[in-house]
Image (tube, rainbow, N blue to C red; front, side, top):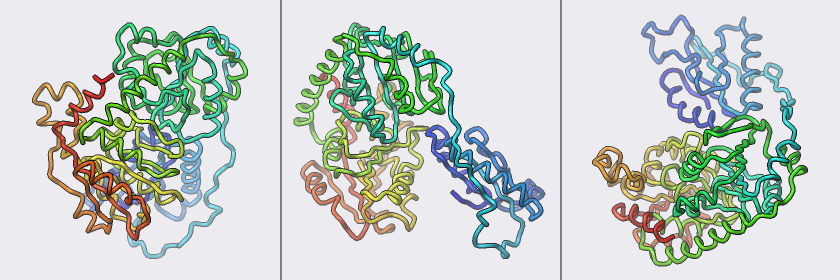
Length: 480
């Protein structure tokens, strides 16, 4: 990302923070003024050096002047290496004096070099040691958070799932699929009694991937702590449940390459029992969705079923990604969401950027507050004609009606953002084809043709009744 000096740079902070917590290589290059021009009242100047210090891996503050070419080259090289190999954001701050007329079109390649050597991590504890502990447990859970699609990891986990003592919990953003995986965590555990929670509590917990969406599973493990919690990640040590025993600093596939050799199946009814509960939940889920009235829940059900095979799916934060957790995923679809900071900032921008480099159709499902907040994302010339946005407009951000605390006080007056906005005029301005639906019949008609080829990107805006969405969701869980 490249910007001018001044407050323009500060607008990047949400993206920098997201990249920091999601392990995304991101290079921010900002123009600046020479140090002698800072804090003297000159226009478009702020204190830019190290402005992202708390959420960046490296800050290269270049020096103005041709005599510092060698020093600047080293700083730039280190910044690019850090972003590439340590996977995170770096900031290159470039001071310029005026005028900026005598410039070159291309930086000579010799000035910037990146080594092809990736640092490796040594295993300090033997796989045999943890394999013995694993084999001694009759109840084990593997929980995977945000994870980029990985066929090798999929095969390794399917192999582990042959063990009757192992439960594998995945999320929409895990991009892992199998009939023996439990993919709708909240649907499984929300109705459990205290006695059932104790029955589910594992002796060993193995976690992989990034941020976990489900609040309910976090609350479960914080209350019912496993005896052993191991986390596998080449970079981050996530002690999400306050009981982490060991961090394997390596990729999950490398970990399982070594670990699987020391594991053996354990005779246990643990997996069979909870997969039976999963099937029972699915039967009730299907029956409830057949009869439920038009609402956010019903819309998400219909929308997810309609997305074409092989598409790339992006989910906005807040309600959308949480609703998606309740449904089975299409294994051919790659699913992403900005869960590093869980903010609504930039969800649309991320989807448009991903669509630009993806040769498959990209579909973005968003709520109204996320969409309108980031509507500037539509203002660029790189939006592909096959890009599709499905906008669920419930008039104000219904997640606060779902949470128990705001709905029982006057907090809704302050938390919700009621509005009467529509995306129709934005579509006219940005040359998106606009469609809308206000009931199930209209929605089904629109979804039949919405993903077809067209001369422009498209937005389908679905208006849902905000007064009933929270009641529908609560009844959904009561149904179990």
